[in-house]
Image (cartoon, rainbow, N blue to C red; front, top):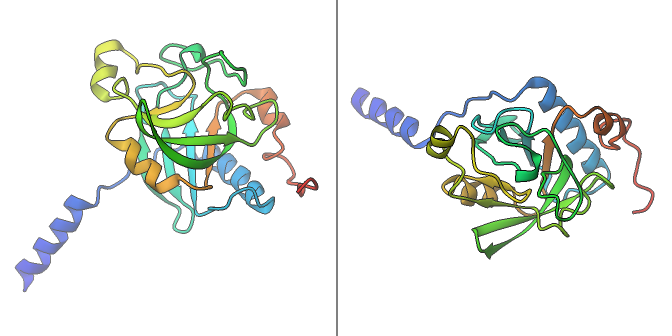
Length: 211
């Protein structure tokens, strides 16, 4: 009986990876505030999951987290590439403009998934006017890419870069997309003073009277 219990515990440990929670508490707090505001405005059909990207971290560090909002547990902690127009190893520039090839900041809602040139991909809609609301027009999506991996980072000193999409490893992309699709929040952070001061999701949350 004792052997069986130990064996079962080992099996659970092997099939359930432990997720390290290295998400900065300040960034987590901002993301939770933004998601709560969007939920209050009824902009999130699926409000149980929150994805956070911290673009202030280097590209070779895990900087995307998926949080289960019911348990506050970290479900995924992954590498994610930024747009080639945003910088090399570090992302420092962000845009809402078509053709900029830069990543966008702010709060997004996940939409439907599709199969494209990168395989399984997930569309995003930006919720912040002038900051990320052209995301759908720019085809900013979540997808997998060969240029996102620890091996690529070790060889080149940085991850490869996208056209602004949140590109994940080939292995992680399908699992993350499965978890976050269909109306959950995605919050992309960088300590940009203008955005932090002006975002309608980070200040006092007023009801959306247009809805």
